[in-house]
Image (cartoon, rainbow, N blue to C red; front, side):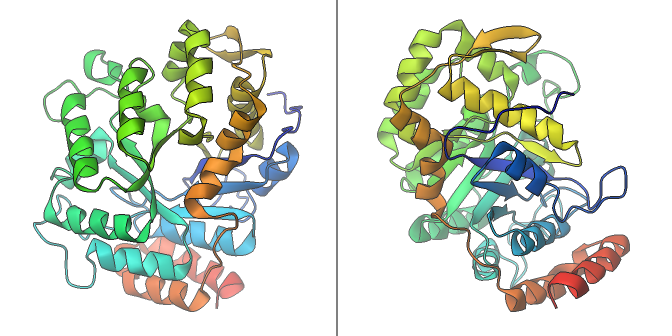
Amino acid sequence: MNNDFPKVKHKVIDGHLHFYDWKDENGVDFFHCFEEYRQNMGLAGINLCALPSGSAWNVTSNLMCAVYKLINKETFAHAGLLYDKYPMGDTMPKGMDFVTQLNELEEIGFDGIKMLEGKPTLHRTIGKNLLNSEHDKYFAEAEKRGTHIIFHLADPIEFWTEEGLDYYGDNTFASQEELYRQAYAILEKHPNLKITFAHFFFKSESPKELEELFEKYPNVCVDLTPGWEMYLSFYKDKAFFKEFFTKYSKRIVLGTDAYFPRPTECSMWLVDRVYRFVSSPDVIKAVADRYEGGLCVPNDAIEDITYKNFERRVGEKPKEINKKALIAYYEKYKHLMTEKDIKYTDEVFAKFVR
């Protein structure tokens, strides 16, 4: 893959990145995996989104993000909630309720919370809808504090109607309509939640619904992380979406959903495409071998989307990591980790944390 991408011409923060392993296929550690990407593209900062829920990573994903943030000072990070079991019970164990976890993660120095709980697969694994009392207390506390939440809710409608790698049409998953019902119920009860719905909230085919959401809830944003299906929708009516992006520029956040371990060039390709889609009329090869031009919205709208909206939600500088709180968190939750992850975490903590 060609890695000769031009540096961005505006201040840019990639608001949505992930880890999936400690090392890449060559055995290179994750410690600086996104730093080359950030510097090569001239990014002002990046935001790591942990994904501990429903995975073998458990607490490890949060720990990796905290260590990376400790080493690389231009890094923001959003941690994920932990569950003691799946499906979750009616109540969380004492000292592990979500409000306590929120306290712990904020004390460590995370900049917000990443929730995957609205994705059909994890939603099914959790075994309860998002309106249960445990999550409700957490949403109430997050609303009160102004905690930023990046929320993956639903998926493209095709995943319910077309059989493929991700297929939710076998009646074991919540429908897209039901997931949106739960999201709207959460917002109705907690209207000031500071939430960014990932992947344009999967509403690129129905932007009028997003307009209604923006008008009703002052702290709701969406991000531009592909699924590429949404960009195909944007390309269908670029005049409309240029006006939409300009009018609602304060409600849209740039992100790529790039992840490690993948080659740095993959992250560079993604941010180049997303950034130029917003900022430039350049005709580029973007998706499905199509060549399309960007929206080229006005400069003040570009700045809103590329960095100001993210900073408005989490602050202009990443929070500092509290090593003492991080060690306490690790010791409290290490029983949820595999022996392999504990061994490697001990090595990493000895080098960077303790």
